[in-house]
Each structure stands twice: as structure tokens, then as C-alpha cells.
Length: 87
Image 1: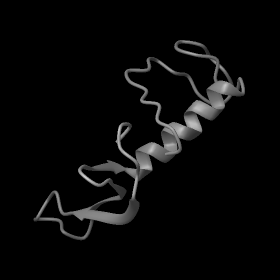
Image 2: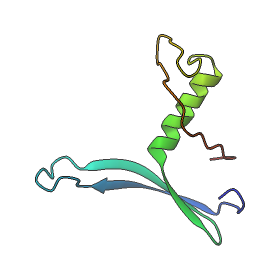
Image 3: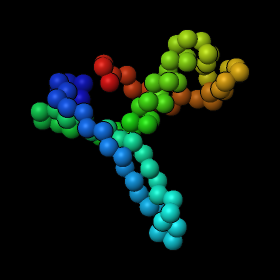
Image 4: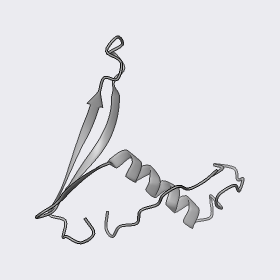
């Protein structure tokens, strides 16, 4: 949605029963739907949130980078980071 203005954000809870033999424990995830005039995009809000926390810890030096040890985390690798404005 980088090329089109964002018109609305819709937050919702996604729930899915992966194992029908054990329906008491569905998979749950918070999602966000981003709406533009001609396009829409849905993403895991949980992933966006935890990725932002991770990036903040890297920026503040609490995490020093791939393979570096510290008191809180050890990052083995960073596969993909998407940066977008305002979201």
C-alpha cells in the first residue's frame, strides 16, 4: 500500500481450528486489513507488533545484531524486514 493513500484500517481476530479432533485449541491471531481506493492488504497485526518491538530493541542497542549475545535475545538471522511509513 506504499503507492496509494490508506483510507481505513480494520482490526480483527482470526481463529482457525487446525485439528478438528481437538477443537478446544484453535489457532488465534490478530489481523489488520489495510484499505485503499483500489487495493487492499491484510497482514498479521501480531507479527507487525512484535517486529516493531524487535526493531526498537535493535535501535536502542538491547539487541546488537545477528549472532550477537546479550541478556535478552540472541538473533540467529533476520530474513526480511519491510519498512513502511506510518504503519
